[in-house]
Length: 230
Length: 368
Image (cartoon, rainbow over all chains, first blue to last red):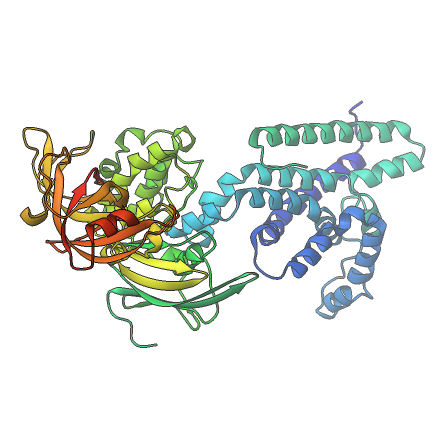
């Protein structure tokens, strides 16, 4: 059952690397966005627009997202051509390219649990910490983080798990270059295309178990902290 | 704006929200307890939040003593204003113990500025035994005392108390009041107390700022606020007098003398209250518990009969029927004493301003 080929191992490595980097980047990006959405000032119209923008990957076919990213990041696109004019490579069919795609694709899964955790927290604890002499970063580390720990765990787990399940964006943007952009979901597709059902089954079953375990953990945490609903 | 006086908090702010406008330009003396009194929605909490730096109305000005907290582009954030905040609901940080909560601000206060320390604050607030508890293991009253202690331990320059007793039941309120009352006296930290409860003002305030519809209508010493028949403090529960003085040692009947010989009360001590002689205290006297006699009555059970001069006679505030009169009387020591009478008695006795009379005080409540 577990005699995986070197290609399989390479795909597992790329997948885990992609999911890990995506999660780390998302925690950094999603935290301020979620805080602003939950507690920020500014016009309600702008906030609603940002909220909708963040949620877009939930409803958009991944191929649409992948297509526009391909256009944007490829050699003829504004980002890709700018990079090339600086002597760098464009990002289509690269690991960095699919990393950018993954971050955008999983953004709502990181933002929404955090936003809910921050909304439940409210402004009060932060105001109190401020009155006690704690500056911005101090408040984040000593008040917000410990009090919304559950939200961060859920956000990180979901971002990670959702990246594992990514297919369409990577197919459009990354192709299937082994060791670079060939992730598990793509490899399973390739195995099935080649009628190698045994290999496809090995990887699929592994993913199935892994995804269940991740969600089980999320819901268990959710119950314990009772801060975030999915 | 003129140069701010050294010991005041000057604030000038305009703020418009849908259905609400705040427009305040005033200076609070930084001494004792200033109560911000008014109905809910009158803007007192918003004013407090501007002072704390939690609201940032454009064009607003906040000057604390010699320092500028807000003016033009200058804006000092809350964590550098050295202000202690206590809100109505529990705000203890749930992931920290009581000790952790108390020391959160203390640790962030530069050492030379620390004037109050854990032991004395814990003793002052009676929370010495709770230090190792978790925040969620405390009762409502204990939580508020810890919140107060936590604010005090930053040795703040100013305490902002936003209805700190509002969420507490009467019993718990009674238990915390003495701590609040002692606070400004023992620590010397000026405070602003937002409240809509007249009894809190009577008990705790040095002066009162009356707020109405986003405006500060009047800032006056408590004594003056209690000396006029139309005081907003009397609007809901009727007129009261609050006398400030010193309580003497108990006599053989367990009664304490209060006030100078020309206006001497005898007051039963309240159970549980400290009984040190010569301590400052406040007496609260309901105007409905005061009757007027033209000659000193001989055979009555009432202990406290105080000679007074009647100053004004007005219709009584509150709604007790049309035929009630509020007599504002002056005791010989200068304190004001209110008596609520029926119109009939007023006419029968022929009471007029400047009539000499005797006030029969049926019951007094010792506040401190």
